[in-house]
Length: 262
Image 1: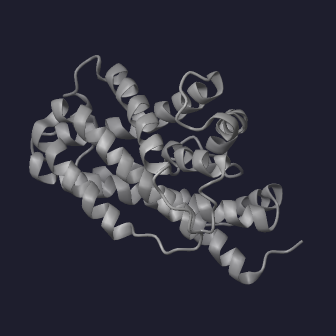
Image 2 (image 1 turned 90 degrees about the vertical axis):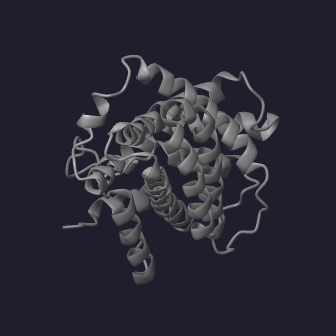
């Protein structure tokens, strides 16, 4: 089996998106200082609060976003519209600081989830399919290249391997019961794992907003960085998944790992 040249080009583009520096590096570039400055300003119990907020935001946004998107595979995604609306939600979040996060995070996460589903649809994914819905949620666990990645295994496939079994069980459940049903162990475990990884990046954004020189006025810009990052993750993720259907998951993973970005 051999990849067509156009498919290899697309897979290379997907790897560039998925293995780019993570959100923390992008935020650090923007604010011009290490995020440690912001982490020092966060309350001691902030991690536990983030976990609760992100779990709630993901479950509510998945229900709200994925069940209101019309299934039109191949339709061009509206990335700019979603960026504009999430930026507006960031203004409020930045203005009210920590107190505003509980209100802003579910809103911005729902907008991002709609954008992710929109991108999935543009890559010919079927939004009526249970696995596709969960693959949209899975995007929130993707963070870009990790310092722990070695030369043979990508951060992207490490994350997917972590979620594979949970995603399979959860997909079987929602195919029978729907995504909005709560309390199923398979769904709870899947959402909890995604929330724990998504929460790291939410904390990075909140840490940046905690730096005094940033201020409320840049809440919109931070949200733009946030959604731009996850739009990149979604585009790369669904290019890979489309090619996996065309060839095979094992073959595409092998080809992905062979691509050098140096």
